[in-house]
Each structure stands twice: as structure tokens, then as C-alpha cells.
Amino acid sequence: MKYVSLLLHIYQPPIQFPHVMERIVNNCYRPLVKILRELPEVRVAININACLTEMLAEKYGDVVEDLKNLAREGKVEFTGSTKYHALMPFLTEEEAIRQLDKNAATNGKFFGDLYNPKVFFPPEMAFAPEIIPLLKKRGYGLVLFDDLDYASRYGEAPKNYLPTT
Image 1: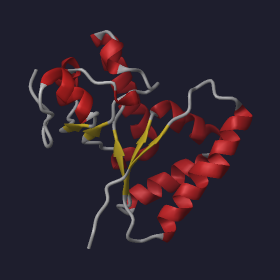
Image 2: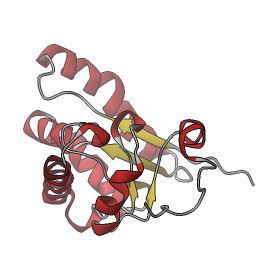
Image 3: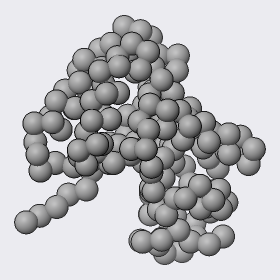
Image 4: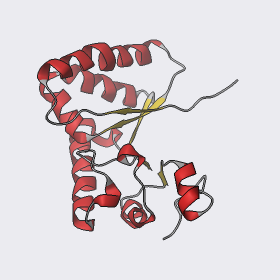
């Protein structure tokens, strides 16, 4: 048996045009949850920034409920991120903490205990070692990042842990 790990990143800016959002929901998000429901052996990790969760809940609550049900069934695991897709290395510590906490609180509001991410997805995979202490304090054990970029800047990239700064 062969395995493939998939991380799906879904995001829309909070100022997305309504007609564009509707097309994305109907052409991407709804078909995605339909496929996940129909294929019992498929499991995925999904990164959904909380600003998108709010937008979906407001007008497309079925998508949020479907993701919640898929998480309940063990078919979807959520990753953490920043609420508004902010690039962590460019934020002040105060703003980074605000983004992390708002993302967790908002997604927790909609997904309940099913939203308990252990993996962090930095928007645009923007990474710097300085963000690690903030992530560790919030319970993340892993962060996804481009290992080639990391290795070119800091040496070999770790494969199974968060390095210390």
C-alpha cells in the first residue's frame, strides 16, 4: 500500500468580490467536500484561515458544516495559521500573537474541539526561526516550510521537530 500526504490550503481575502467567492465555493470547495465524503480511504490536512471560515459561515454554512463533519469522521485534520493570511516573519510579536490567537479562537468557534491543530502552516510558507517560540507556546509540534529555502539560509532543515532558536 502506498500513501500520499496532502495538505490543502484554502484561503480567500476578506475583501473578495461576492461573485468570485460564489464561483470558488461552487467550483472548488463544494466539489472538494463531496469528493472527500465519497472516498472513504482519503484523508487530508486542511489549512483554512479563520477569515475564510467566517466568510463561509456567513453565506455558505454548508461548507463549514461539511468540513466539520469530515473532521468528526477523521477524514480532515486542520492545521493552524494566521487569521488574515499575514506573513509571520514581517509581523511584530504583538501582531503575530494576535493573528495566531484570533485564528484559533475563530476556527474553534466554528469547528469546536475538532479544531485542535498540531501543525502550523505559515502563509506563503514565509518562515523565520524567530516565529518558533510563539508556535511552541501555542502547542504546535511541527511547522511546514520550504526546506530548500531553510537549508540555504540556516543549514540542513529538520524533518521531524521544531528547532530551537
